[in-house]
Image (cartoon, rainbow, N blue to C red; front, side):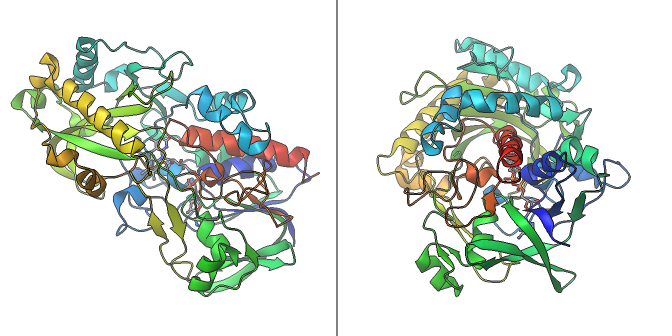
Length: 493
Ligand SMILES: Cc1cc2nc3c(=O)[nH]c(=O)nc-3n(C[C@H](O)[C@H](O)[C@H](O)COP(=O)(O)OP(=O)(O)OC[C@H]3O[C@@H](n4cnc5c(N)ncnc54)[C@H](O)[C@@H]3O)c2cc1C
């Protein structure tokens, strides 16, 4: 049977696309996912770590050998099923910046209803009072000492600078990911098929059309045929799939040994994540008293939105105060308390790349974030101002009673040291960015359609041309939701 639409990748975006597109009962939809599908929400079937919103979950990671900032999950729900559940919005200006890449099709006003819908559907609510730790109350006191306002709702459009409790997409202590929020209500529809444990190898392309996708399950290759294919393998997964299919920059395809089916220079370019550095603090005995049930609390609960000297009228820095049981480099808990103030550049200018490392779909992609490499040194300026502010926090009367500070030396502020210590925020976007066909870095049009192909679309976080100054889950969900609507009104009619 030939499906009307095959969605490749059942993650944050893929589950939303599958749910929305299958609302139209005339449209047959397939959702192909490399990882397992544990079925509808059921605590007896879903692994506890994926359900536990209070801590990191790494058991379904694609590659635990990769640097921690390259984490992504292989399971229905994708990274939405193992993420931190922080549900924040960017500034309106971030979404308005998409307008010039889409001839006005995408801007804040057009996306706002979908963001609001995502907040409702993902059942977003603030950190419950009983979960709020005294450490985070202390950080709020410290912000007050520094003259930073408390924000009742950090997602309010007027909340441009200050500190607040983070909104979470969690029900009780359960991570409420897109698999539960979107896919579950659609699971029983006769026009929706979920093809789990199926790794997409390549698209089958004839002329300017994809006729289907070759996937491998239990070591056996099979082909799913479809009239339309939507790629939602995530920012790290979608470009390698296109490259294995012969679509991408010519030199990259040749190096890979892939046929050059379609030269598209932007595939895998424009990688952007919020670059970061951490100021580690020494927990004092007094902190132990403030954290009686550390392992049972949300690790990070508050966020500071701050403005550097480079900012417009809204924040360009996040500071994430964190205290909880220590973790190893892969995010697994290792024991006693650790504390830190993590600083993120929220409107970074540096860009990186994602490339397929091999024609083998199981091979991890080559990821170069390019953190802190923009030619003007803008990102370095912003992070160092953020690190200064983090020092100010640590020196407040309230925090200095709980944690010790070893101030950064001049050597730690040197560009080479900043580069060596750089990390991200788990928010990669942009590697198949939307933009006009005459922009060599643009991969897809405003309707998500890949330039040069008549029935292949980009549906995930890789489509964003500009990163919002926010955790990216809500925006990804809103993008997929809006895209589904555009496709149902347009190409799928
Ligand atoms: C550790 C971590 C913590 C995060 N914390 C937060 C947070 O607190 N708040 C927030 O807003 N955002 C957070 N994020 C980011 C957020 O989860 C992502 O923005 C969002 O999930 C992106 O959705 P996506 O659909 O583009 O990609 P994903 O959700 O990663 O989905 C991609 C899907 O495609 C599948 N796939 C990939 N390749 C193939 C293939 N070849 N064949 C078949 N299937 C394939 C994957 O298995 C996966 O299911 C976090 C991310 C990570 C990794």
